[in-house]
Length: 216
Picture (tube, rainbow, N blue to C red):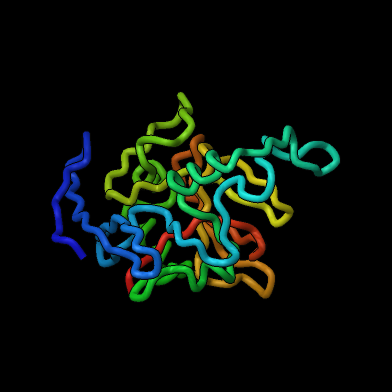
């Protein structure tokens, strides 16, 4: 781990203690940040575990669903575009893969650990604005730009469906939590370009969402 650097966010009076770690499995380096009593990845995980994909990999990117339940305006990305998405947003993981994808000394945060983060930054109604990166999100004129007050730099990585289609990069970020809802579903957290809040929902474990790791 590198030495701690104190960085002041633009327009913010909050100090961010930012450092880095190297994942020994593939030598990728990640920024990490201490927020209250927790230390979080300040980037989405980009470890190529089986069961993970880059946005658009092996499928199509779509605008949503049409009336018969098929992806609307499906588009196939080039390999270069797919790899650029991984470099920018990290990989997307199904829940079972996400549970074991973090490097040694780190883990997929539980639902309670997500709640601790959200509460520390002021509660779910405004936490999205405070946690989101000021870049990569689609701009909504009625919603403040992400202020990234705590250095978490939440990214709009979209999500992948189990049918191979991908949606909402730039508009949504969805992250797995380690806590099950039931045998088929697990809890997730969402952030949106069009809202300030952080959403909490449960969803199918087969879907592909981003991963943030928290220190053991």
